[in-house]
Image (cartoon, rainbow, N blue to C red; front, side, top):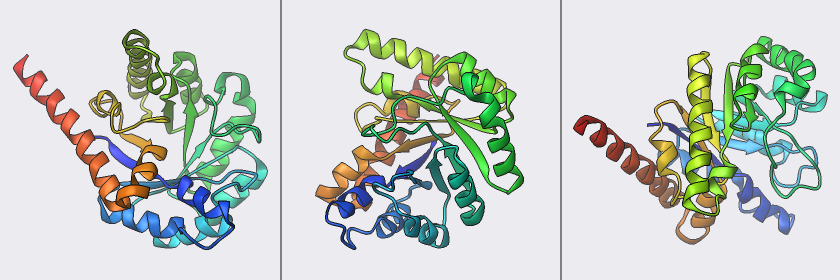
Length: 250
């Protein structure tokens, strides 16, 4: 089964509404790990709208699994990553006006700028993943600039208006994941995944990691972080088991 990375950004969003000290995303990360999460993801944005520098610094000290920091490919963020040294950095596009990340990096268009960032972080001991749309050319370009991993944007799948659109979006994710694995990339996926739609992606053997945030934090508000994370792990495992049983029958 793919690893589950729990994105705790919106715990910090709730805190920042009042500029208070709680809820503390560090406490949320510890609870998520206790429940079985395989990693913790945070997005350190340029405008610091939710996760703060302090959060990342403390998380680096207390996270026992894997710390994945999403960030833009800017000099400020590269310097921050080389100082804190998370286990992984996921480079994402970023606009101040957006509510959440909109679309993947255009690696084809921006390869000249991205290649030295990937190299610098790698030489500094930080593994790099690129957040990209499920497009074969983007996967090929990510491999070309020596990124060790990609995270496929699943927004089109998660937001599909009907079964036909969802099946088409899933096919694109599957094709991109298969190409990535064929090229030797680690392939992750995320964006908009919920307890209801995670199954088809959890069952894809090419995906080694799913990063899920809003859905888990939303449930955690009502039932607590540990129960919310365990429920997501159960949902993922249930679909993987079903898929394995189906393959054995054939």
